[in-house]
Length: 155
Image (cartoon, rainbow, N blue to C red):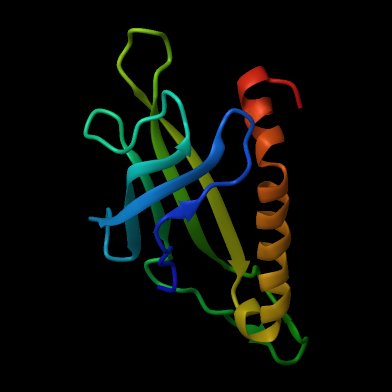
């Protein structure tokens, strides 16, 4: 898998955090088709934020399909095919957050799911990459606004 982020990760701009960075180390993934990293140290100003621990995890995991799906049968007489299967990849970040002062952390989960129609990796790889580029660029550019939305509920 080509997912191997370098350390430290430079965090996106989010109101309330100043120059956030995240030092990561390889962790044991949940299965053989995943890679996982734990955030072991924080950089910049992140008052009140804590790094990974047993009681308050902070991990980033990338998953690929266990078995990739092919395009499947195409009726040569009609030139059409049935349903196009999708190969699903995911990046999941887990972070322990405190729901109420004085309480123990509860795990917050953020998932990006990438469902690529089988065959697009060969027939249209640049469009697949353009989709990723636009999505991740929009999320990166709006990270502070998304942070405000999930905290205030105002979109």
